[in-house]
Length: 249
Length: 249
DNA sequence: GCTAAAGAGCGTAGCTCATACGCAATTAAG
DNA sequence: CTTAATTGCGTATGAGCTACGCTCTTTAGC
Figure (cartoon, protein in one colour):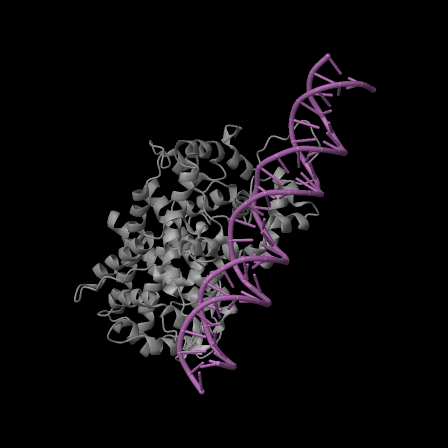
């Protein structure tokens, strides 16, 4: 782990703080361009289409040229996970924490939804890239005027991030699954459940199936359904935060 | 999509409802054995070690023999995602919903934690396998005595599942990241944040860093920390459910 | 029993991928 | 001008998924 500017090499790379080389051939590629090209491929054709060869072709270079700038494909994925984020919107000062956190959470979800592959990138550690930290900051900022301790603020924001990531993964993967095989949703699914769910073994589920909760009349996957459920979960979570605040005075 | 017993082939496979073949050579493998072997490999060496060749070797067969029983590696992963689950513990009848849901959620997390690769298996659609449905049922069962409508119960349980999956992913991947590179946590991390976080640009984060929230004196990754944060999030969510129930009478 | 159909096991081969290695071309420092 | 550093890239290796087709086994139907 070489250090640069007193920072671990990986973090320096995320922040674009590599000291430029003094001699040698001028690079025809930059880490930023490579990352951007990879993001474009992933956005257009999914993370599965991102191979070193494909990214290199996009840039008019050879596959192996990329390895002069990026340690491995895995390192490239980490870079993508920071560079793909927009800057967070400015926190409206003085608003109440709940409105602020609600807006923030929906902004995070919206920012991630632009890159459906995001939830498939393996986490490596705590947030370290400039965009990730900026978003972290703006989430914490929404809690600035509350009497929570700093560690509690981190807990609240981490809980929201967990919720958003879980939600992102579910909504994205279900949507993809629906594209591949619409029969796994809709009528075929509810018919199968009626056949398989034994009311003696699974009484609660049988009641839900019987009530027709899974009978969507149309055979399409409804993203707004999933988002409504997310808004519901979010409200519940924030109600909990409100109760916690009330309890502390 | 061939049907069998009036069920889509994929679901029939999950439930072990394939009609046995009348003629032809006796199979020396079953889908169940293949799935079990794959799970053992994944548990012992991670999902990355699960290749068709590796699973076949484990069973003393050739790679291609597996394809007589399983359509593709992807199909095998789906089977693993159901077979890896234990049966849910019986719901304690008559308890209050909150205790029931708390216990249920922790059981789900514990069941999934036995198989750290679980959160990397792509979702394909709504739950359809016998174990997944049994768990779904037992979560819904905890809400049986509440006045919620069936659809609302589904919403509450789905929210919990989302939370658990998000939590699982975070805790597992952070633990793996810590093994690979402990420097990305602990002192090196907090030192890097102090260098990078400009208090003008990220005031809220700077306050948190300044308060020493990220200064763990030991250089180890603390799983109980992460779990404490999860318990916190869960309490918040359930507070929200309680508030919702109170609001409806 | 005999024949033919239906399956099972598996060897081969094609394709995609990540990436180690080493050489040639290029640039700046001394 | 020499030399060290650094980039671009061709080649090769090994792993992985899976289509294809051959062969062997078992049973249904006569």
